[in-house]
Length: 70
Image (cartoon, rainbow, N blue to C red):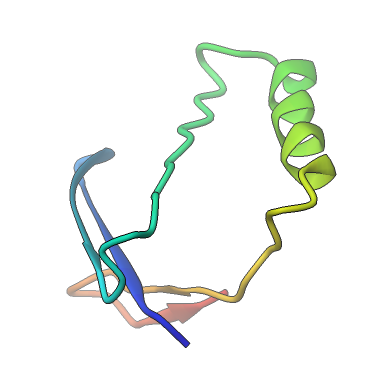
C-alpha cells in the first residue's frame, strides 16, 4: 500500500507528501457556505460513478487532540 499525506493548515492544503511521485492528488473542499446540499451531493455522485476511483480508508490526525480514525 502506497501512502499519501495531505497537510491542511487552517482549512488550506499547504503540502502533500506521497510515496509515489506519479500519483495525482485532488482535494475538493465542500464549503456549505458556498454551495448547497444538492451541489455537494452531485459532487459525491459524480465521484461514485467514476470507475477508476475507489474509496479507501484514511486516518485523521489533529495534533494536540486525540487521534481520530475514519
